[in-house]
Length: 114
Length: 112
Image (cartoon, rainbow over all chains, first blue to last red):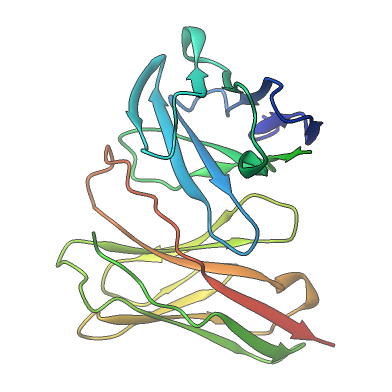
């Protein structure tokens, strides 16, 4: 297993466009998390899935944001009508529930909205 | 929510020990203390965790105060590759809880 994979690594988009990011977790991990990180800050929790069910969403996740995890495997995070304030690093992590073990993070997707 | 307090930044010289402090005065009796670090252009990575006793692994040591209101991450010999942001996080022992919440962490600079 190559760990948590995120694509693309970088995305530049014009304000108002829609973007979609993909996360492939560690295959045996049933939990998947999305975080957002802006410069100089720690990662902020956005949402998480257990298998295909989205169990929690942060207030940071406005209605322009939607996340899916079909079949409990990979996940996508879509941002509609992007705004300059959406520019950030979007991090994905996975873990195995019930083990108390830590999270494994991907390298993130850096979004720049111009 | 239990919170942690860390210095914004610290500096160290290469090959010297580094002690990264974390205050968590509102820790509950069952919270675990976790440390993660984030290298430049990477996602955070797990470093170490503990409950009451000091812990050692290949990456670092974790010293926990007797009253558990503070802890210290110890890098025994800092290398340039240890330059990163280090996060101290309190976690509920229920493994099904989603409680990984990051503060701003401590940015460690290692000077050659």
